[in-house]
Length: 294
Image 1 (tube, rainbow, N blue to C red):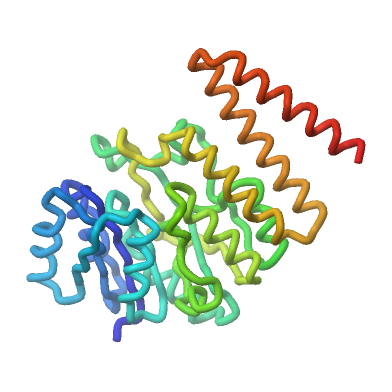
Image 2 (cartoon, helix red, strand yellow):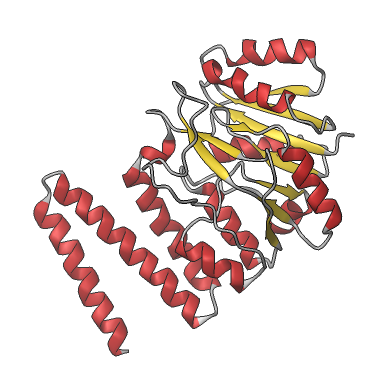
């Protein structure tokens, strides 16, 4: 059995998939299997995977009807045999020593359940040029935090601490936390890390040479759908309300809901729905004032 399973969900990204699988082939740790889950693609995804399966038996192809990203990841988990899991979307990459360095870290730190490192963005036309963020800000977005429980939950309630291909996790995490929420169409990784924190899973940041998670930004990227991201953020936070017992964390979560609602209102104003947007903002102001009084 391989030591680590790399799970690659793919939906109509056949034209990028080869680069992703090449980044797996280039790993210095060779004790892996790579499961490509074809989520009902209508392009050449199957042909691309077939060419890799023919030349390397560590690659495996699983087809399912289109059910979404979370469902595809879950299918990959169910078919995995490795002790560790690496998630890798079909348009993204990982640097050559990522698996080696992070698996070694987990062996040296048996108390750690999830290890993660740095990430960078890149574009298809200039893949050699790496960015800290899509907006071009010259500061890392990965949060260099380690711990468990409320310490991690506090940071996650502010914002996601990592992209989905940044960590490697022990498969026992799934046994404790369960699978990705297949009802979510965005932010499913953030919601999963939140559940991990609620289950007292131990996170650890570890930075090492040539172990970056590389995320491609392009017009088809799901993260560009601002409205979907904000509405999903609200949905996830509302689901969390009954599970958070700490008053400080509850307040932080409520503020996150208000901030996302206000951001949606600004989008409405920007799109010409001025009255709708202003009324939403006014309601949130009143709600915040009442919360301060009580």
